[in-house]
View 1 (cartoon, rainbow, N blue to C red):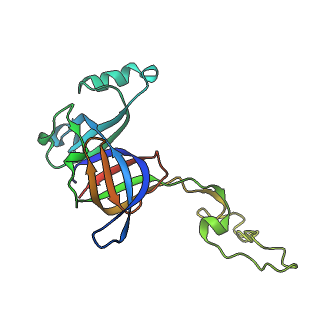
View 2: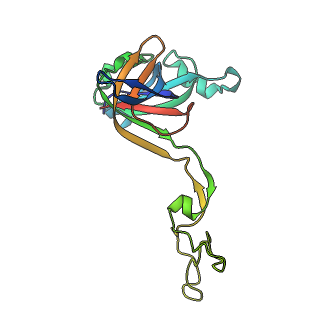
Length: 206
């Protein structure tokens, strides 16, 4: 797997290509991320790097956290994530991963958390059909039967019912990088990504 970076979704806008066609883009403030730990096959059983993103509030730092970050000479960071790699020797502790490690035209996978919809009903959550809307129906958006009575006498696990909707991890694959801003650490990606502005996202290059 190629190098990865953490970032924050800024929002969406559009740009125009040479033919005048509007292209929707998502703006992400990506990194800089710090390499906090390097894991290798002999010691940990797999090759990976652990990166950190965004400085943490000094009042909320624990001594155990401080010790972990001291090994890399980094400040205590709010978010940590591991990325599998092939060659751990290409990285050093404290190394900065920035947007200029990516290239325009490169394809990336972006993982984020979708917008939470709260407690929703069957029509919105599972796309059930509603009942007749005539006056005598008395069953417009009701769930209906959820199982037999005496046998089996219970509701089977996995039954589609009302409940929490959204607020789940989703990955969008192969989004093209259309622009890079080194000064502001911005990545411009073609298309949309999960979540609302301000959400934490993970970007992995192909």
